Length: 496
Image (tube, rainbow, N blue to C red; front, side, top):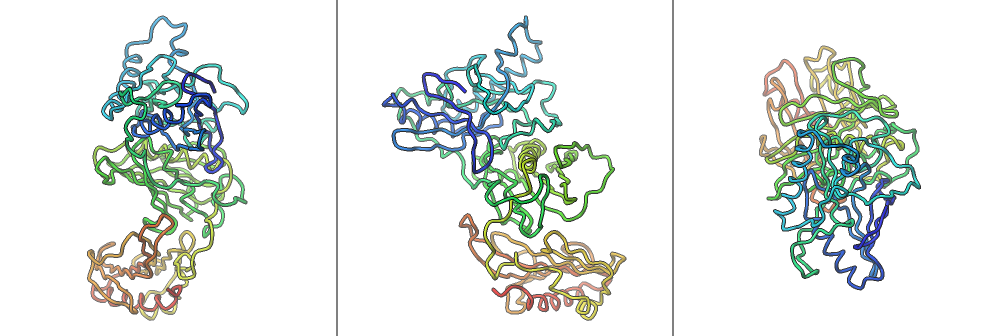
């Protein structure tokens, strides 16, 4: 892409996450290059802000080192103003405010850019995918901006726009490319500098961690599709510190949590699969991208919904929620997550789960097989007319046809099992809780711990079964039935 006094920058392909990135290599003829580049990487990684580019990784190979960063295509501010007499005041003000916001954040962290020029400010006014082999004959940019007309709104990019895992984006993003050709220093003459922060933590979604065999835009076999391959914490790091949590709820779910400066969670990006076929019509704006259809719901308070209808008539829900303040706009966060999902689906089927679950895992279980129709009729008094197995058969609901009475079984995961929300109980020898009217009036929910383990990130995790009974009966009778059905279902769970 270019070269300068600080090193050479290349456009590269990240084979693990299947995305374009920018990598900077220090000049091999500079004895101090490794120390200088290491210091630059540390300074750049300290900056987490919607208007500052993400630094993904630092690779040290002895005498050679590389910084791996978000790749941004587009024109510079110099290109934008070239040949124009002047920018309209509101346009100039918008650009100036975005630059100022990025610099204010960097200065608050004790980091000085040192080379803010028109050439180092990038506008993604027209988002394109450079063809392989194209060479940029201009200096790579250190900042990117969005024109005033699209700030704060949800843009509907064409298929060609959604091109990489680092989706150039919907939100207003001014990027300070910390370590391209302009130095990001900490204000010291000593190039060893301060160590700064570690630049974020958490695992990355690995879009090609397992072989894909199906056509683009499809989810494929429900029980092997991996939801965590559709979320990439690094692609959301411009909004703050990101942590991937693969075991935050239902088995068909994956989350990325954003954390504030205090370490508390400030936002959640939740991705769920659904076996329900998408229904046409309605008033939700949609756009077609490749083989999938994306729907954007209006923001509802601190929550925002995005929906992707797959080519094999399943659904992917992206639910973004603001949990604290300050926190990013949930719809901007949802759009960024959606762009990454679409980029993965545009290349093939949802990647498969890697490896096989242990024999005792609920991933091997079938919720609809825990209770047969005779047991539901005998114990719960529910004559099953409708049975919904849910995605992957990790949840199942049987109803009497009217919807007034039924039983729902769900396999869940969490970081701990607690009885704080219900009455402690022991069912079939397992720690449990009983919660009258938790899901709705005239219902009783029983949770039963199945097993405890450490997940792929080394975090303490539990699997448990939830069983909810509802219908026109007294709460006492509903809870008695729920406990009896839970004891029956426990006998058919995978042995722990």
